[in-house]
Amino acid sequence: MLKSKPSDFDPELLAFTRRYLHSFFTKIGVDDNHRRFLDTSAAPHPPDDKLVAQLLAVAEPPRLYACLDNLVREQGHEPYNYPWFIAVALQRIHGITWQQTKQARATLRDVKRKAHPAPPEQTGLEFAQDLRRQATAAAKGIR
Image (spheres, rainbow, N blue to C red):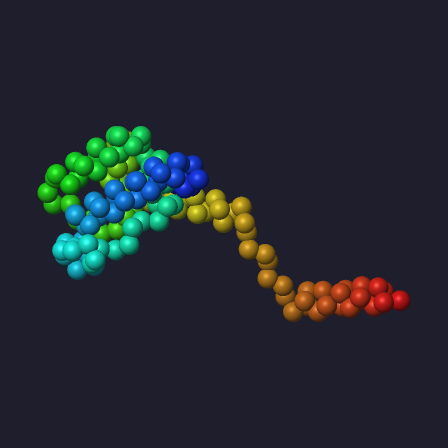
């Protein structure tokens, strides 16, 4: 689910789910002050495709849409951002808690960092030696 990309899904399904999720967020979502959006112009923008792809990776669309429909019927939910829907769908459909999801995201970030480590910093001496090597190589190339 965390590695899902928009290219993994049909573009029409992605667009439909984006509109569907935005509609739900407009109906039951809250702003930073925990107030419902009273009109659609006050609601935030639709979710990005990467987030929609992650939501679609949780379950088959009919099961996912049924889960979202149940959220609207129930009282007391106050989603404050789009990832909230992913966390709730994972919990209700697969029993995966938001804490487990948070840990998985952190683990994935660590794996990505190890795959692309930052280059080691050069010391002043190494930098000077590097410049000398480059100057020597350039001088030999000129002859």
